[in-house]
Each structure stands twice: as C-alpha cells, then as structure tokens.
Amino acid sequence: MRFYDALQMDPSVLKRKISACDTGKEKAYYWTAIAVRSVLIVAFAIVFISLLSGVFGADNTPLAVALFCMMLGIRFVNFEYCIGDSLVALAAVLAILVLVPSAAAVVPPVLLIPLHFAAFFALLYMTTQRPEMGNGGLYSFAYIYLTGNPMMGESLIRRGLMALVGYLICGAILFAKHRHQHKTTRFHHVMGKFDLSQPVHLWQLRMALGVSLVMTAGQVFGVERFMWMGFACASLLSQYPYSGSTIARFRQRLVGAVAGSCAFFCSIW
View 1 (tube, rainbow, N blue to C red):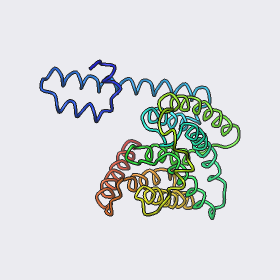
View 2 (view 1 turned 90 degrees about the vertical axis):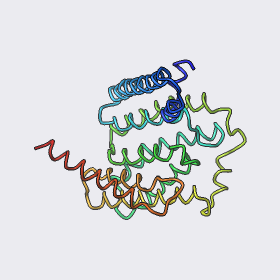
View 3 (view 1 turned 180 degrees about the horizontal axis):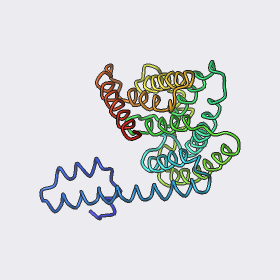
View 4 (view 1 turned 60 degrees about the vertical axis):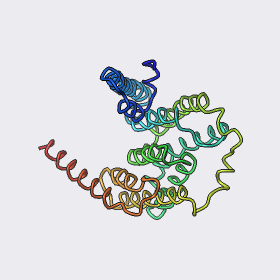
C-alpha cells in the first residue's frame, strides 16, 4: 500500500491493519501513517481556522471550527439522497447554524423549546439517516457550539458570509465525492419514510427533544457556558443503536465533569 493511501484511511482501519501485521516493520509503517495523518490534520486545522477567523473576525471562530469538522466529515459521509437535494439541504443546514443561535438569544423563553427542537430535529433529519456514520455527532456539536456563541448585528453578517464560503467549499467536496450516489433517491422520499417504529427516527426524536430541553434550561436559568450542558446531553443520548441504559455513560461523564472542573479551579488559583 502506498503511504498516501494509508494517510486517507480512518484510524480505526489503520489500527485493524496493525493488529493483523506479522512484522514489526509493517506495524511501524502504519503507526507512522497514523502519526503523520494526525499532524497533517492538526496543521491544516490551524491554517484553515486561522484564515477564516482572520478574514471574518475572531468572534466567528466557532463557525470556522464547525466548518472544518463538516469539511472533513463530508468527504466520507453523504446525506443518503441525490446530490441536487443534498446541496439544497447543505444550504438549509448552514442557514440553521447561522440564524437559529442568534434567534434563540432574543426570543421569549416560552419559544425556546419549540425553536431548539425544530432546528435540532431538522438538522438530524436532513443529515443523519445513518447515525452510526457519525453525522449526528458532527452536526449536533456544530449546533450546540454555535448556540453557545451567538452573534448579532455586523458580526452576524460576517458569520453569514463565512457560512457562504463554507457552503462553496463543502458543497464542492460533496459534489466531487458523492454526485454518483443515491441518484434516484429524493429528499421527499426520505420524508415519506418517516416512521416512529424505526430506530433511526426514534433516535432523531430523542436527541432533538433531550438537547432542546437541556439547552432551554441552561438559557432560562442563566447558566454560564450552558453549551456544555448541551454537549453532555448529546453525548449521553447519541448512542446508536439505542440502549435503554445510560447509567454507565452518565457516570463516566459525571466523573469527567468533576475532574475537569477541579482542574479548571486549580489552574486559576
């Protein structure tokens, strides 16, 4: 295998290849590919995010981070319907990510739950027909992160312009990588298949409802950096296929939250 081809592989695939290697030389080859891949991704992330932040303002760095993650994910995972409808959906996704966080910062509290639920469910339904591929976590992260960092006025205009640039980049990647897939499947076909007896639709509904309730609670009660509540909730609910027990995951995240909080307080003393 060429080294370039190894760099294109997912780390989980490379680790499986390492486990199947018979010689130390082969294992070193794949470990080197993992290390170089990680360095290149981090370096590219720094350049990409710094460039967008420099052009559109440091206050819009959260969207630059979200766009970088979307750009990496969209190379490998599509929306499971034709490219024309996928490009329209991508535009709708970015519109939600730009506009809804700002709207949520100013609407009356009574409207927060329906606003977050509608926006979050729409994101998941447009992008995540196969949660096991990771799209759900990607767009959940983007929505929660941007909701915790809303923009107004001139900054919001710059955020919209950044989203337009992101659309052109991600749209080009989506077209180049996936234009020949799912040619006969339209988005209205996907909508027509909605059925709460299907695990994927129950997963989407549960994620949207849980995150919208937690995000609303954080905003209504004035919790500082409430987006971390959203991250924790999304992490607990993101498991697919659905598991009836989240106790172990809850304990792990509780321990992590306590440890992180202690480390933060120690760092500021």
